[in-house]
Image 1: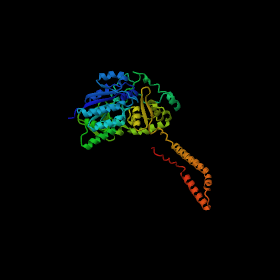
Image 2 (image 1 turned 90 degrees about the vertical axis):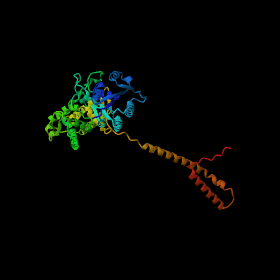
Image 3 (image 1 turned 120 degrees about the vertical axis):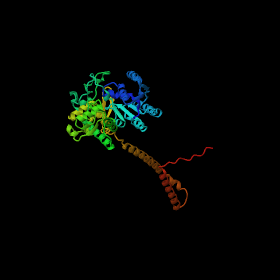
Image 4 (image 1 turned 60 degrees about the vertical axis):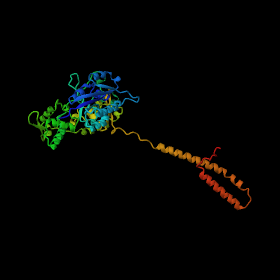
Length: 460
């Protein structure tokens, strides 16, 4: 019998709130991920980290859902990633002190929690990550046991404007690049108004053909194990291979409905009675749909070409909608769903993990895109010429000092023969004196460049 999961929930409110607001144009609702986690086990602890003095509208919903609010004091050097360390320390402390807690749910999209996830997995804990697919790191999605996308938790709402497909940008954005860089965000975004206005609904579902590589891989794993591929076992194997898999991304409300859609597409055949179906993979299923399954990496060269063209326009950043307009202008037949992306922000998030772009959420402009480390111009290298010039200047100064000292001693040399002519004698005495004088002058010249400190008498 499978062990009942006792889940401890940790909410990085600042990260999830700005991510949902900048990508979905919605206010974060903590009840949605909590309801999804209740389907997977018992929630025994709930903590949320933020500077709650600046999040007064969220305090009420946290209290209504019995979430313990942990106050994060702002640092004098800024608030960036202020809750990360507190959250990680509290999660590790609970893992050591509460043995009954065997599952942890982290509601955040920050890749800084990857070390925490790996450490908790090493202690045998089940890890759930809840975040938006448009702003949660793909590395974080693939390293947990299950990733729950916030987009899949949204319910159909008639007041929500459905997600728009990529159409050519408005006329104002079709101007030359210099004018496009100066133009503000597209006029079709009234989301700057707080508390309402434009909101994005659930993204459009993907084609079931996009899931077939994962289905085929899971069926191969079960076949090697010698296990009959039943529905429940197939789903758990697919979750194990890809924690980010969710049948709702393909327009299905349950896994059985997802299997029915794959069967209708001609990919698989079901055997047995209802509730105990076994799955058989059919050959030629992809040919029946007439489509080609692309990988996510195949879309990166297309984006790189667009970024190279509009590189100058991205010096101050560009909105995700603007980049999407450039993409549709350069590649008119580009369809992100063919590559497994439900929305363009999700595609940009994947490109960020590949160092092509850098994304920063902004409440006014939405998700702002900058050039990544792969395409951004390298920083200017330090000039070693300045150091050489300083070294040469020091050498010139030392040489000048030595030349001046040598010249001063040369001027003093003519007085030496007058003093040496006093003793009477012959040439021999004069010659000896001259040799000594020459040797003394040579010695002084050799040691003139180095000054030795005079020896001082000890103080009595």
